[in-house]
Amino acid sequence: MVIDILTLFPEMFEGPFSYSILKRAQSKGHVILRLHNIRDWAVSKHKNVDDYPYGGGAGMVMMVEPVVNCIEDLKSKTIYDEIIYLSPDGELLNQPLANRLSGSQNLMILCGHYKGIDERIRTHFITREISIGDYVLSGGEMAAMVLTDTLVRLIPGVLNDETSALSDSYQDNLLSPPVFTRPYDFRGLQVPDVLLSGNDREIAKWKYEQAVARTRERRPGMLLEE
Image (cartoon, rainbow, N blue to C red; front, top):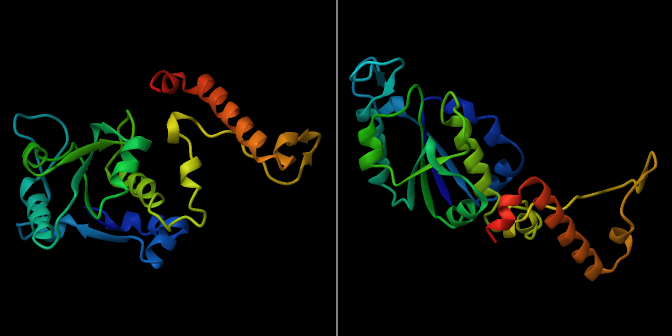
């Protein structure tokens, strides 16, 4: 998978993309993450990328020309499955959506900033808008990090255990069951004996029952959607 990220602040990605699963995924060749500074496509000598909104109002708006120039330049070299804009009013990111997008070959992600982007970009160049939650961030960079991590960990070969992602919360419309590790007894708090029984059938039954109970308690709407 190749993910091209369009941003005004590429430096923000250096830390998150240099550690843990994302670092391993890149070093193993499972994903190529490319950062593009939108200012490099600005048309003015001062590299302006924002301006005041027509009609008045507070804040600045990302200009259409630098963003579209960047998008078109990249599209001339790569065919994208989706051109994604991260927006508070986009489609809510969830596990089924992540599962679908993780099978893509090439994705472009546009990070908005200020009061957003010129509407003409959204109307004519963006193919999908995604939100990571019902709240507002200062920019799309952190949302892009969340989306990237969510997708990359689902790529076959990225996780050491191929079944790990399949047991995550929200797969199969259930939250994950409780998990335990050593020591067996910590200050009188003991691990459920069934997990040490070696009986795979009983362990699977316990995990399913716990997942259903936790989902019913914390996300009952997920059970109604089954």
